[in-house]
Length: 237
Image 1 (cartoon, rainbow, N blue to C red):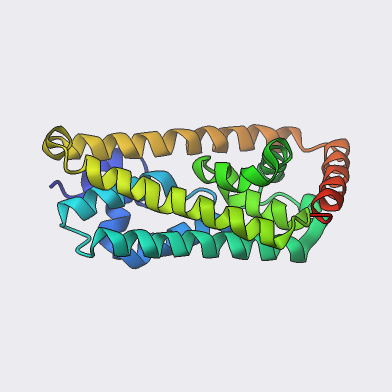
Image 2: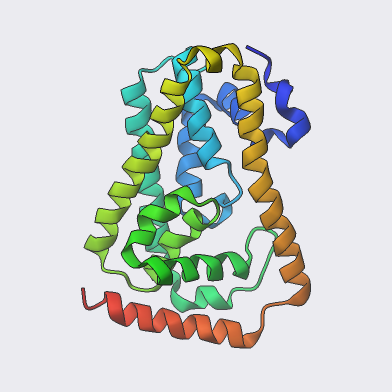
């Protein structure tokens, strides 16, 4: 197994799943999954690649010595809990979230994108968003802002948490036992980091472009109107 520095050329340490796991262990994985699942500051974290790598390294047994079932259980709980916090935050801040000014860690574009995703897929978005970087962080918050029925949210949150938290980890675990993957695990980990960095880099670039142009008042007004309509819809269910 290479040292964690193998992948540093592809980005900073906090985007390198192997470095994160080797440094912070299972507790670090759980903290990142929780943060990316519903905290505004967690949108840039490498969720998918982290879980896949966790599965690989659980199979390898070097950095994670816990059984697969325990890793999956704890990751799933962290993912569900993160979404619950995101939903509660959305209910508390309400439509004012769409008037919040941009900052280094908050971009209106991310909220609007999650809202569009939520509007398109409805309650299913809570499950589908799990597999979409950045959108998965803001969707539970938007669901809370929209007043989505709590029982409906919890149901889809649990389903999404299990499919994403356990599914991606299990996939990495079993692929980690494939001879080709075991023989080329260094290259696999580098590829995982590369794949996780690309969408983040694209989003950062788009955020910078959007910041220069500025969000129009009409877009914010339209988003707030859509939120009110969605709140009325889900409040009936």
